[in-house]
Amino acid sequence: MQDLTYQLIFYFFAAITVISAVFVVFSKNIIYSAFSLLFTFFGVAALYVFLSADFVAVTQIVVYVGGILVLLLFGVMFTNKVTQVQLKTDVFNFIPGLLIMLATLGVILYTFLTKATWKLSDQHISESVVEEIGFEIMSTYVLPFEVIAFLLFAALIGAAYLATYDKKPTEK
Amino acid sequence: MQHLALAELNSWSNALADLGIVGLLIIPAIPLVFIAVYALYYGVYGERKVSAFMQDRLGPMEVGKWGLLQTIADILKLIHKEDIVPKAADKFLFVIGPAILFVGAFSAFAVLPYSSAFIGADLNVGLFYAISIVSLEVVGILAAGWGSNNKWSLYGAIRSVAQIVSYEIPAATALLCAAMMAGTLSMQGMILEQAGPKGFLDWFLFQSPIAWLAFIVYFISSLAEVNRAPFDIPEAESELVAGYFTEYGGMKFAIIFLAEYASMFMVSAIITVAFLGGWLSPLPNIGSLALNDWTNGPIWGVFWMLSKSLFFVFVQMWLRWTLPRLRVDQLMFLCWKVLIPFAFLAFTITAFWEIYVGRW
Image (cartoon, rainbow over all chains, first blue to last red; front, side):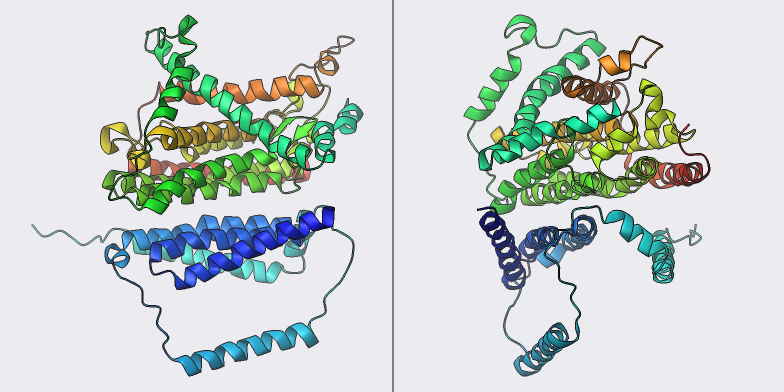
């Protein structure tokens, strides 16, 4: 009973993720695509919860819904003409697209089936993983962490520079 | 007392969860009913009375004793109203906007502890979840503002989103100070860290010399996050008619307001949990007069939690009827050049304090 309920909820979220993702691709209205992305991100966050990765799930919501999706919507809304354009979803470049898709899929499946070492366990992770994540970031992965921090800092300065007013001397 | 609280921690919600599907439906129903009653009475009626008394008026007096039935009459009127969707509006986004908005406000209630014995879900990332789910409200506001197809609505929505997204940074940094002091992100865990015989002196607000700064930064940012005055430029009546909900009427309008009052309670509850001991009693044990032990327990917890949170909702109303509205550039100045530096200052000092001193 319990397992069946969990499976039903899992397939519910999986269906939401896939259907909304399909809608993102095939919708003719770019605003609907952007809003549909909301459900995709939430579905993915729910799937992370099923993997006992609470922290990753919440981070997914903060970064993708709170950051990227809002940025996308802002971009679309401030671009005046974009909503009047009917998006074409015709098939262009069929053969190269198919080749790239199959190659990517092949690489992923090959890695998935042969190279990856999955640590399987039938135990649910019940204790908090937040401390572990913090500890790992500050010890093993401190160099990548600092590099990313530096990159973001540079991006912040760049954004602030672009946003400043032009301080040209006004001609009288 | 510590052992007592641990023994009964989440006992009511666990008992309900053991009932199966019915219990699992009752758990979210309790905050939902609470939001409705609180928004109806404390929110609408209370706000009208508070504003009236501050302006030396009487407020609603006609319907029922002291106008107590006024909000019931209002809600009946709103239910009866025809459900109008403007012709030029984007039908789908117009309808789904208020729904996303309310879901965003209500989702945060899943991790709010109402008492030591009752919480929707005691997640180990509870605090992080509560501040992240607000981003759902942002999407709801954008859907409502864009879907209305009205320039005031769109301006209101854009202002609101810019404001919420910016103020999330000082708010989250200030809450990180409390999370560092607690060493956990779980809501119940944070409250248990503040338990002690000294009553209010054990709360995080009084446990570090800089916690008051984080507390003030979070309080100001939380006002901006729920679009309350003095940060109510998204709905600025004198400029934008009513902001992103200009086109809404009837029950959709009621739901938007329900979401706003729900968010007001939510940020007040978070501030209570993070800095003011949540459901813990403020009274200290004085010698043999064990006031703290007598006034702690699941039932007392409900009382303390609600009275502390509702007090902050009252402060939000008080500020709304006292302070003038900020301009857009002043709003951004306050966020980026005042609150964020102070939040980082509080963050750094709290980190050093926790390493070298800890609890006193």
